[in-house]
Image (cartoon, rainbow, N blue to C red):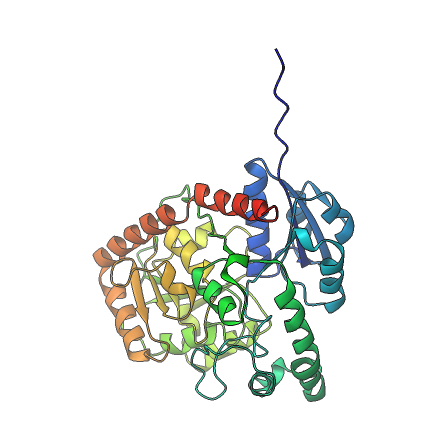
Length: 391
């Protein structure tokens, strides 16, 4: 009797600029690669620079090396944050049939990187236009003009159009939410080339405790400490609350010190913790009561909010981009318009004073996201993507 030949493992390569826990993209790469490897995939990596936690980060890969070498051994190559044009050109020239770009942010198709209008700051639905979008891309904080005004002009009007045209020639795209798929379709990318990879949210093996010392409820914001990512808005809104509260801003970034100073200026520093960056964040989520993400710009998914929901926290967030995909308004949390500060304060006050509602919404949020974002759905997304190159 013949013994069946062993099934070949699907090999997926992750290519990105940073190896380590620099931000949400790198945390996604780590969690995704680890889950795939735990479920029978071979995972490889190629990175340009190491940052904090790189040793632990790299240990989850079966092999790490140069871009071309790792790609040759892989069935599928996932490009993540690749800002360098030469690398993108090399990948397209050497192994286009294996290539998929994971679009985490708006930076490939929006010079401003925020997908918001120049003056109103509301969501922008137009496709890329050279002059108009280039001028809009200059309308950011001057601190975001890396290298100064002339360097910023060069990026928006010379480098970006080249990168955008290369971007459109990539064979396949992967996104974390249907909202991002719609953005790519507006850029002229055929829907058949775009694959949604839903995240996998494990049910934390810890009970949600909430504030454990009898003090006021704890409001949590997690994510990059960068202006425009919601942390500054979070602090301003806290300063207007009348109900007793405590708050945490979990994470770090280039504006972390400025946020600490802002909390002092707003006279709420005594109510706010800044625990900084943490690899293992379960205790911070477990001992918080409410998650609050007052984003002013369109978020591609808001993984942080979905994680908070998986810990049993009700989530209050602005209806900006992918956030609406995991919050059922008035059931698992509250969705409000970006400019509705009064509404955000009212919902925070409501949850601060009503412990029963907090727990009811938190349990509903936990059930909803862990039923919606399953391991089976996660793995099926990658199998479908890996098989697509053969179509």
